[in-house]
Image 1: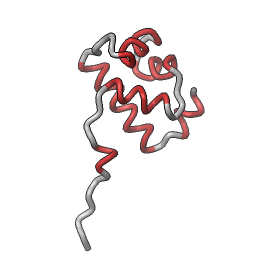
Image 2 (image 1 turned 90 degrees about the vertical axis):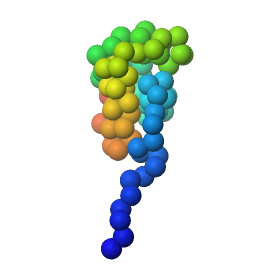
Image 3 (image 1 turned 120 degrees about the vertical axis):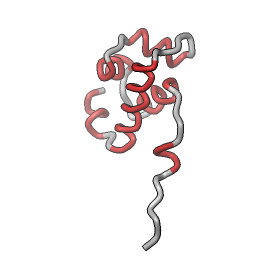
Image 4 (image 1 turned 180 degrees about the vertical axis):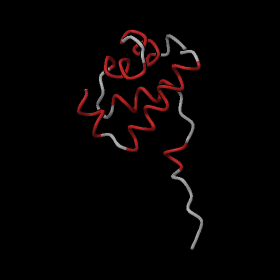
Length: 80
């Protein structure tokens, strides 16, 4: 048997703003994204526009959520 390698798209580095774009494509609203990571809709909007850089915890939460949604988009899509 060969070595199984992770998909390069799934584990590729992602910025918080890229994570928000992926989540919006599911689709999730900015409010739903904010609710999922403990941030306001306006904070999510500022990050997505590049007007604000999140702290490490929020950035990590956004990227983690996007990876989770990439793996199983159905539950989050229903929440939007």
